[in-house]
Image 1 (cartoon, helix red, strand yellow):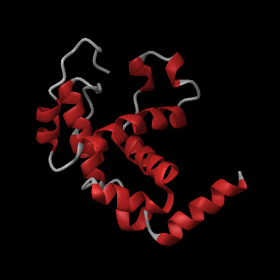
Image 2: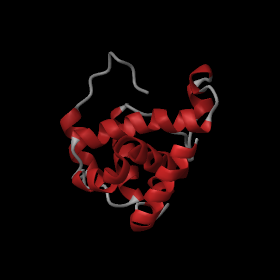
Image 3: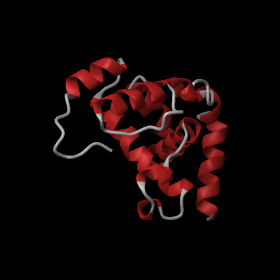
Image 4: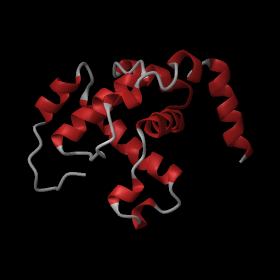
Length: 138
C-alpha cells in the first residue's frame, strides 16, 4: 500500500480506470483485506510481499466478499458500479496500483483478471442460494 503522506489524485485514478464510482474502489480495497484473511491464516503477521494474492485469487475473494456484504443483492450492487466482469476488477486494481494505493509483483498483469469467472454463473440464483445455505450450516 502507498504511504499515508502520499497525495492521491482520486479524480485521475477514477478517470483512468473507467466508468467506476469511488465506492467500487473502496469495495476492492476492502475486498483485498478480506481475501488476504481468507488466503492466509495471519496476513498481518507477514511482510507485504509475502501476503500477495494473485489476480485470480483476488477475483474469487471479491466475489465472496460481495456475497458476504450484499447477499442476494451482490450482482445488483456490482452492476450499479459498472462491474460486470472479472476484468472490471482488474481495471480498478491496476488504477489503484498506479495511484500507489496497492502494490503488485512484477508478474502481475491486467490479464490475470481476464475471464476468471462468468458473473451470470457465479451470481446465479441457484449458486447464491447454495452459498447462503452453506453459510447457515457453519
